[in-house]
Image (tube, rainbow over all chains, first blue to last red; front, side, top):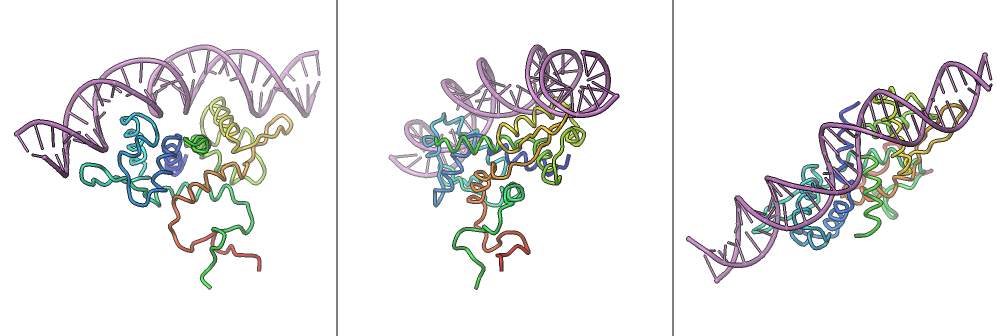
Length: 107
Length: 107
DNA sequence: CGAAACTATCGTCAATCGACGATAAACGAA
DNA sequence: TTCGTTTATCGTCGATTGACGATAGTTTCG
């Protein structure tokens, strides 16, 4: 069992909860960072949200920076890249639909 | 909490175990289908492997077709597409690295 | 130095997961 | 039909997860 299997599984595990998906969506939609607004957005207890944030942070998916009295959370793009690549190798026996519509090589 | 969050979390949950990642890798590397060879490849008890296969099947990630006395498992590309898309929206502030090297639009 | 606000940690509890052996079910071959 | 092979299901057990309230740190402001 390759160690990369464990790494991919760990990444997937960090995503394997609706609340954590929700949090990532929030961070994605938020230009800067957010702190305690996450709690009311997900509708769970503060301690529970803190635990979800801890898991995401432990997986390297988000990063927390101390910003005054609160903590500023932000996405850490690249942490999910191995998993994204793996999924990419699984799903796209699709043909030439690449990148986003409109994206194209530098003419 | 959007229901799509639950759907994505369910897909991630199906991937959140090294043995299941291993199984998907095996299916990816296997041209046709495989049945009981999976058991010895992952090195767990037959009942345990069967349970992992059941979870993957329940998530729609693999499909099992009865092939004589054995069962032929194969990847179900497209089932993971929502998760792949979501991850794609998270990771790639990358530039113009698209598709695989060598892949290019039909001339 | 307090007081207030925000976050992390602790302790607890029910629920789920992962693993196994044992057993049952389905199918082809003899 | 009977046997052997292959897969699924059952029952059990320990470990982990997810949730909460309560509590302890930090940092800013008064």
